[in-house]
Length: 185
Image 1 (tube, helix red, strand yellow):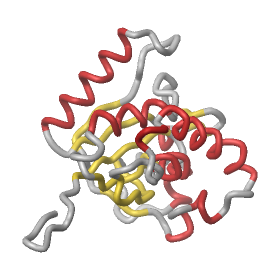
Image 2 (cartoon, rainbow, N blue to C red):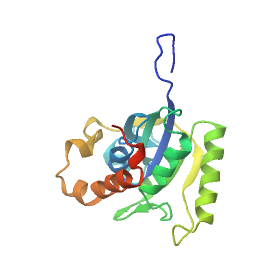
Image 3 (cartoon, helix red, strand yellow):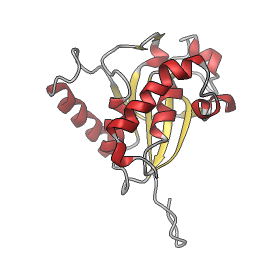
């Protein structure tokens, strides 16, 4: 948060839109984003791990927890970037990643975030950007569990991995194109 030494004020967003590697790699590019941590939220198991979450049995979604400066990148702009890099109209799936762990979800941290998310979803649905309605859940933020070390900065550490080249890289490229004026310098 903030103190007398003039540190930046950060807000938190928790987002799920398929594989967390994609979200982390793309959203990290945005100016005003201080950190993005891959993890799990929305399930019933304490201390979930990747294997358990991937089984679909825990109820968790793969998510990212984003620390951001709302004066530099407003929450609505962050959500717009989120909707740009995934398909919010597919229930429990993103491409070949299928299961409730890959659902589109916005876990909100206060009433203003919830209202902003719902308003944006209604506006996007009215614009008919996608051929189907948005199915993104908007729910109060549950406990966030950071993913294992090897899942943090996955794309940066494994850019030649086939999944990264085929799935992550195109999403990062799309974000960089659409949000060119909002990228970190």
